[in-house]
Length: 331
Image (cartoon, rainbow, N blue to C red):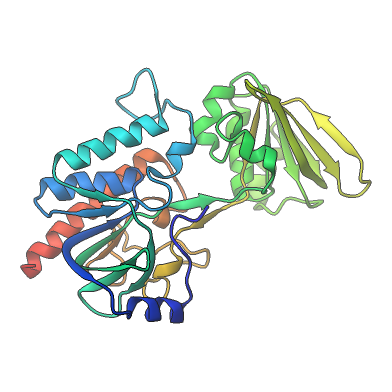
């Protein structure tokens, strides 16, 4: 699910140029995951009076997970929804104006920057913090949706610990899939890699790691037909052999997607530099983009780690970068 509406360059310019009510703010934050809320906490405490729009999925991807055990400060763990609600309350406590709304287009050709919300209102801002995240790619199966957070995951680093000693499957044949499979192999009893092609697309080094890990079994030329389970979660997956057409069922407790992410950056692309995938480029050691006063934090600019704690850290950086930017220009 894309958090923010994808528009072409012409659509963005046309929408942003409509005669709509205009509101001026000092700092506008788009996105409400760990990065957005942390940026809001720091910006609000700096008396920048930030306005934050939550997007279609308030709380971001973490609200689709169940238990989070690797975020510092929660020794007993916490659900993603509870953590995001805590961060939201903390941001509001310091004065953040949290609103529900979807950014539908932007005009970042000049300052103040303009963002259209719900095609109904223009927000003009002196500083813009983009924290729109990245959406994991899924196969599109009904059973996949049914068991999200109940055995289906798109983050082995986040959820692998819950499957220690069990059998799991990883879908994908690239570097990310190989990394996740080898990570899970250190926790789980057995790891199946489900690969549609008759070969791995990963680098030679990553392939060697997979083939030299005894509890990883690569199932080439197989695709997922259906994930099966019950009220307690996933307990198996039905695969189809692409050469023979035969189905095979394997017993697993966890099903991990590793077929990529889509950064939610489409409406910024006419103005902001991105890599070939769509991740927003930032100046190393900062959250600054190619535009002065526009900052990016969290998964929308992080193709490597994609963790709640790193997103929160970059949200802190974005707020400090924005505060310094505004201070230097006496906005």
